[in-house]
Figure 1 (tube, helix red, strand yellow):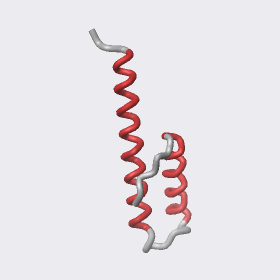
Figure 2: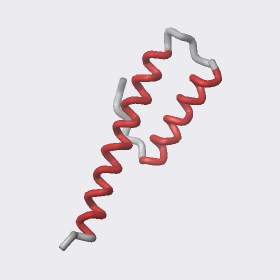
Figure 3: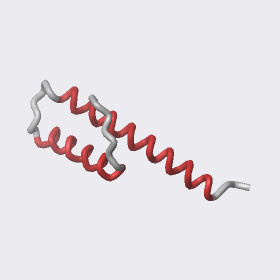
Amino acid sequence: MEVHNFSYEETLTRIQQVVGEIESGTINMDELPEKVKEISELVNQCKKYLQKVEGQVDDLFPED
């Protein structure tokens, strides 16, 4: 699975798209592990992005 350089919003959209494919049954069982892996990697990208943003916000409002 390749790592995409999507924006946060694009990553969320892709997660929703893949989940929709799974829920609708448009993918076959042979494709399911790869789709789940893709979602996992995309969720990890979102987490890293959110951690980065959290750090930036923390830098703007340091605790005394």
